[in-house]
Image 1 (cartoon, rainbow, N blue to C red):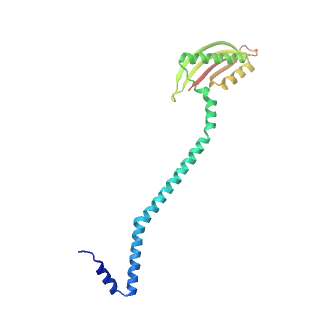
Image 2 (cartoon, one colour):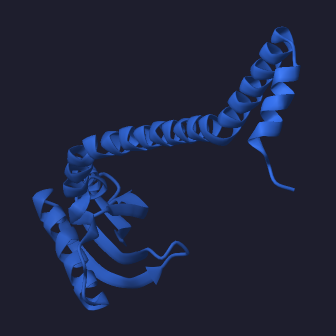
Length: 186
């Protein structure tokens, strides 16, 4: 069954002018439909998907640029808190530095230390460690308050766990104090 051009020509010659025009119009419509379905639609759908992908990448880049703009602030914050994250080699070194720090703060407050003992190092549930020190001291109430203030505002994360303040004698202005001081080690 060969396709013969002469037979098609005979078929077209038998059609009226109006029928021939309708046939040409129908063939053009079918051709355009095939062209649209096979070529144009896939190209436009690919262009749309690439455009959507570009938009999502633009949003990601904007977020990344915003995060990068925070870099200087983050580094400044890191430098501010870097002293809290010093690597400490051993428990003995931690306890020694804690005892020195407490003694230095007591001397700065002109407080007399009667007794100072290490209580040991405890590991908390959140994997932080705490070095505990028991301190017994005496001094004027102003000196005791200044010492407590200095402990709580220390740069080495010292805090007062427990304290007891009592007068040294009945009518004395000197107070005798005992503290449990903790240093948080991160």
